Image 1: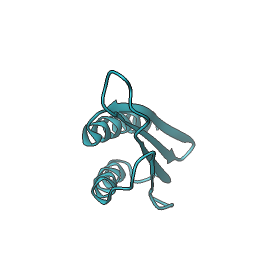
Image 2 (image 1 turned 90 degrees about the vertical axis):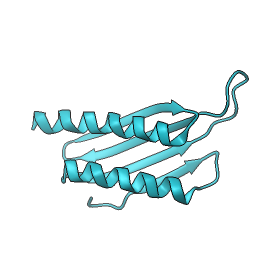
Image 3 (image 1 turned 90 degrees about the horizontal axis):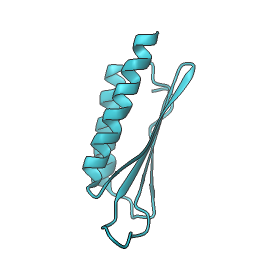
Length: 101
């Protein structure tokens, strides 16, 4: 990556364990497609819903040459499941982009 990975936590305290997990996932994406220019990940935990617990929302912006790949609103009450789903979606979009090239 040409710019360092940016990890942001919103409406929740920062977590070193989550950040380490995010860095590992981002590194795997970079192994899949070496031309990633930038990667921004936002983890947020909005206010509690009346019927549910507090879901985690994951937003990923991948900058690649000529395009920006965006994964938005992967929700789950387990942060690791939400991260897995979001990075899986990013991986699929990155693979599609690589095929188009």
